[in-house]
Image (tube, rainbow, N blue to C red):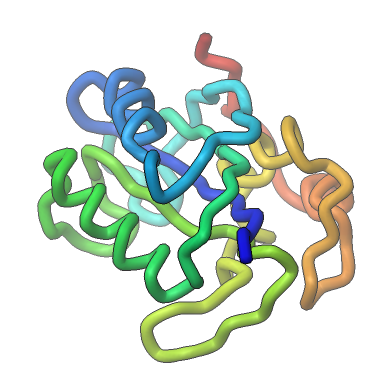
Length: 159
C-alpha cells in the first residue's frame, strides 16, 4: 500500500538552495514527488546565533512504512553530508516527517505528526503552499488554521 507523506527540508550551511534541491532530487526510487512548496528564507528557530535557513515542504508518495521512511531519510541526510550537531543548531540538511497519511505514531524513535510543527512558521508557511486544508490528526485543525496562530515575521520567498 502506498502512503502520502509530507516532509520538511531545511538548510543553513553551504549552498542552501543546492542542498535542498539535492535532497529532494534524491528521494527516488523509494518516494515519488507529488508537490513541492516554494522555498522560503526563514530566521533561525531555537538557537538564534546562526545563519538564516532555507525551508521547503514536499508531498510525496512512498511504499515505505513510517519507521523505514525515517531510516531512509536519515541515510539520505548522512549521504548528503549532514554531520552530528546540537538541537536546533546549524545543519547542511535536515529532513523531518511532518505527516504520514493521517496516522498517529508515538514511539521512542518516531513521533508523527511532527510534535512541534504547529509551533513553527518555517514549517507551516511552506506546508500551507501545498496542503492548506490538510487536517492535523491530533489537533483537528487545518494547516491554514495552525498557520494563523504563529508569528510569520521574517519569512520571505527565496526563489
